[in-house]
Length: 408
Image (tube, rainbow, N blue to C red; front, side):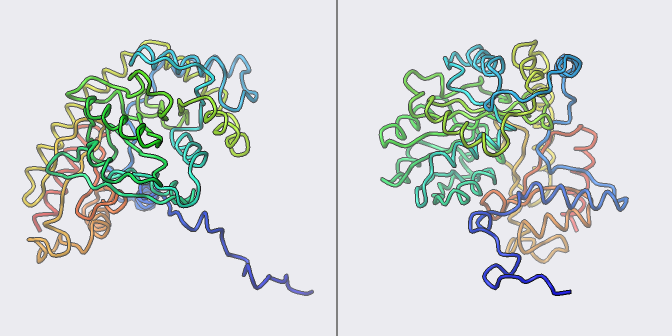
C-alpha cells in the first residue's frame, strides 16, 4: 500500500498567515493550566478568569426553560431576533438615554464576536488602530488577524491608567481607522470620565476615524454613574458600541453579546456572521430578552458585592511589601505592580523573584496554588491581573498565600 503523498509546499501542517498572526488567549491558557493542576488534586485559589461567581438570576433561567418547552429551538435571523434587538435598544435607552433602532443592532455569540465582526468589517491591511495600554488581549489579536497595525498609547499607572483625548490626538495619523476604548477597563479597572470621553469622540470624529467603545463592564462602576458615549448627540455616525450580557447578568456561558452601530456597518457585520456562526443560540436569546427587560435588582446586588471585594483586595495587596496597586474605578479586576519581584527589582535576590510576570505567574500557580494572569498579556511588563469575581473567603485565602510567597 502506498503512503499518502504530502505536498512539499504545505508539509501537511502549514497554517494561514491570518491565524499565525494571533496567539491563544492568555486567560484561556491560564484556565487550561489551572484545570490540569486541579485534575491532579492541587488546591488552587483562582484569580484568573474574568467570570462572575454569581449564578444567572432565576427569572432569566426560567425564561430559557419556557423557550425550551415552547420548542423555540430553530434558527433565527442571523443578527438575532427582532425581539432581542428591540430589547437591547430598550435597555440601552433606559440606562443611558440613547436611541438605536433594531436595524442598528446585531446580536452575537458573546461580546468577542461583536468585536471580531466589527474590526474585520472595517480594517484593511495596514490600517492603524489606536489601542491604549494596558489593553484587553483579544483587541490586539483581532487587529493582527485583520492585518491592521496596533498603535499603542501608553497610559500612566500614577494617573490610574487614565486615557485622555490629548494622548489620542498625539497618536492619530491619516492611517488611523479605529480607536478602541474599554471603560471600565479590563485589566486595570480604569474609567474614562464622561467629559474626557466626549473629547476623545470629538478627536476621532474630526479625523474621520471610528471610535469603538467596549461597554462590557459599563454597569460596574464604584464612584461614577454608568455612562455611554452613545448618549452624546451626533455620536452615532462615528461610533461602534459593543457589549455583552456575560458580566452584567452573570451569563458568561450563555454567549450573548451585541454591537450598536450605523446600519451599513451592522449589515456588513451580519453578512460576516452569516458565514461563521449564524445566529446566537435561540434559547439564549429568549433568556437575554428577559435579562434586558426584566427586573434589574441582581445587577445592583452584584455591584455592591464587587465594591466590598475591590476594597478588600486592594487593601491586602498594598499590605504586601514590594507590591503597589491602583484603585480600580470599575469592572472586577485589580492590576498590582510587582516590579520589585521581576527582573532587576529590589527583591530580585529573594526566592520569590522571577524574570518576567509570566514566570512569576507560573511560579505562583505551581508553588503557591494561586491563579493569576501575567501582565504581558495586556501589554505591560510589571503587573499581574487578579479577578476578584470570587468569594471573600477565597480571596482572603489567595492573598494570604501571595503574601507568604512574596515574603520568601
